[in-house]
Amino acid sequence: MFSQTGKIDFHALIADDDKIVTRMISYALTQEGFVCKTATDGFHASALMNHKEYDLVVTDLRMPHKNGHSLALDMLEIESRPVIMVHTAVEDPALTKDLVFRGIDDISYKPTNYEILASKARGLVERRHERIVAKNSNRNQGTSFSGQLESDEAKSTSDSLTNGIRITPANVFKQLSKLDTLLSLSHTPFDVYSMASRKNANTFELATLIEQDQSLVGEIINVANMVHNNLEGEEIDSVEKAISQMGSRSIGELAIMHGGRQALLKSNIPWINHDLLWKRSLAASKTVRIIERAQYAEFDSSAFLCALLHPIGRIVLATLFPDEHQELTEYCQKTGQSLDLAEKAAFGLSHGEVSARFFSAWRIPVTTQLPLEQITHTFDELASLPDHARQRTEIIKLALFLSRTAMGIWEPCDSVDVPHKGVLNRLNMPSIKRIFFLIREACEFEVTNRQVQSPEGANQQKQPMTPMIRYSSAAESSSDLLAPFLKSIGLHLHDQPQESSNLDLIDGVSLSGNQLRQFLNTQNSQNLFGIIRNSKDKSLFKPSSSICIPTTVQKLITFFNNQESPQSPNKSPIQAVSE
Image (cartoon, rainbow, N blue to C red):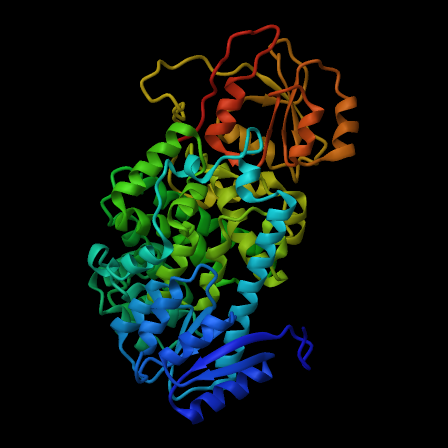
């Protein structure tokens, strides 16, 4: 059903005992295509919701009989709940943080710009609607993320993903309110980043804000002196001088890097390699900048920040639920399951969605939070998003893939989704060799190659590496990401027949269907095996001779270890990069 504006009609419930306010909100929402119903208190709203499903509920906090806080908590327990917006005159930072952590979608304070409130409501409801439609479509087509990841075997049940670990999203949101106590962090770096991102940021106000965090002051002055070594020998001894030398934008990014490093390294979680985590984050954020320069567009601060702090949700989950998260991580390391999928199944929320909640509580703009909610989705799943939202998320996901491939900083439980050529074309990417060179040049740290442990454990004796493998692809070398990825996990590839070659690997990621069949017919080998994107293409290979992307690093390694050839009947493990 469509409104007169041409938009899909959604249904909204407004709970407020102030009749003037309900009329104003109702009018504004009607202009955005909502069909509105009003309630005078929480009990009235609950009764109306028992008879009808609503897409949106806007509630005041102070109401007679049953207050808005209680109403909101009840709605959070509903499996297919509406978008929940709190509209109140109560400005209490502790209450705001509690509501955000529990899962409330938005909070606005009176006096109100009702047009903005209605526009925001429309965006939130449309985004949830698109997500539900995409999810149902994927379910009907049998192409869900988990189905793709497990395409080389029978679909896993939820219990096999999580080893039986189950925590409800409502419980996660409830525990998030305790995060300040468990993971105490200064808000200053985040506030500095927000202020510095504004046009014409005031130098004095920015310096005053920075001086609230002395560790940040020291970091900024030290970096300013190293980066801008004054030719006259004049030392930069104040924050204001540092801002003048480096510019507010660079200061903002330096501040958020400082805050991000604290957030990622401060927690004491022994089963997470914090040093590797920070290196991955830093490399991803620098890769975002390289991608943005390739686009000849204005830098998007949200993509940079998401790439830098993308794993914060995993730190949060491990901090709030240490026993469960450790067991889950160890289970994924043993079985080769994707930790991304396992977290989503165990906690009802991906680490990206938890990161978005963290961003919200630290007052980082909502435009920065949205891509984080999508980063555990596949590139194919992102196709259902609006163009702008899809592009921002693709930049972040591509930066994660490229930086890990260039630097060899993969972990066994990482999900692997090789970007297809369409993504590279949309983002105007230069040649792959060039982009890898720029990433390695930008990242100053060194990464040590180590062997990824097999699912059986770490105490096995190191065995010889896989013999040279002939790699065949129909993709142009400038857009082929599969080959450099495989090399980054330790596989030895070449493109010419050699005496040492006894395996022929086919790139089925770039081609599929009839195109892949025709390409296979040109190959003169009886021992073909392949990496494919479409599970239907498994029929083009011998049984157990293909693996479908997305998968995990560990499953790829296991797949290669299980390949046998006439010349070399014994299985040989490959060496790969790990923590």
